[in-house]
Image 1 (tube, rainbow, N blue to C red):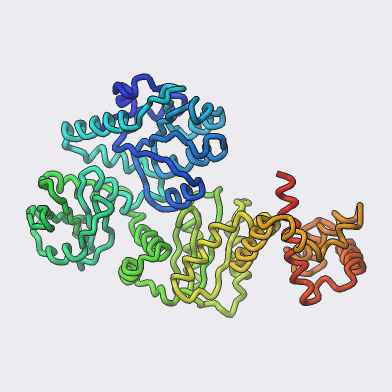
Image 2: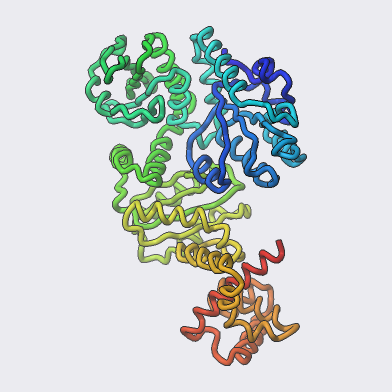
Length: 533
């Protein structure tokens, strides 16, 4: 059995600590401990949380120093830690750096079942090393005393959230438990999944697997890897009684016991049996991750296995939603895309649903196709948005487009609050507006100059500017569309636009003036939103 969190609290270094939230998590198993301290909160989110890594059964130590005065950031950090599988947080230096634990933080942790442990307050003499040493020692001793781990691992895997409950996560959990590198290959010995231990290992596992593909399943082979011994074993994984995968176990330095290899294979087999219906989706998720992370070798290998021609992909849709079951959403979208495109790849990546497709229906306006998908998904007002990225010539452009959307969608939703379908160009424009606002008052006034005559019209100014903003940004320069958005009569919009033309002394759709007006009303809307907040 693994050690439970409540048992760790009996250690001398944790004996005086208090559990302030998430007491229901005290019965959870702990397999590791780590430290979380970042000097840049933005980097914390981008580098640590924007990946598919799952840190199951791990507890974290932190003082939250860089966000000690930002309760919202503290809440977001706990949400992200919970999302990636951390079971709890041990807080240091409360009353020294962090003034106190806010009630919002405690309430959130309780809601998530995320255990929040506070070390003795106002104690500057506390040291991370004392807790780290005792926790690691307790975990290692417990593992040595309990060599059987199958039931424990299956229990841990069953607690992994569905989007992360895949073979890649399973192998990472098993690699950490046994401190061995694991490779899963198909019957043709093509590597499907591979996890190294330690993660920084430079061992060429592909070459090793190819070299020892004829290895007997009941054998543990020893070879030299530099100045260290390397122990290799192979086990067969079956589906419905038919062998279809080979599991290679590679362990450096310390001997690999055959019973450990048997247990590793058993856990993988149980995962296939219990959650095998998702197995085909695992590889598509891995391919999506390989594309987004610019892992070209892995991308080509997985694309070949899945028979997906990634060179034919020229368009990407990025779907954002927070209110629908991911499994149900994935099924709906895959069915829709399959009916409309010859080449497609659909899966989740970092919280977004990514749709990569070819030009099968290039004759159709992409907005029409996106609107049809939106109508299919939005039947229960799930608050979806879709960002359309066209003319993607290679995976590098796909990666850059995704990065832009991930970073600027929040700003785009401020500039275009009535839109549900965005373009990549609108993401880039949103960045431009954001940079203007951060450039100082002189830069802002220069951009707002084209609408200055309207702003000087007293009581009418706000009404006219609001109408012009919707007319240009969301109304497609059409009276009826603008009227529908503002819930006004078409003639009212006509009158207001005519009044604006009289004030400006030129048509609001005249080029090149319209380009300056468009940017001016976008910045105006952003400033209004900032003022409201």
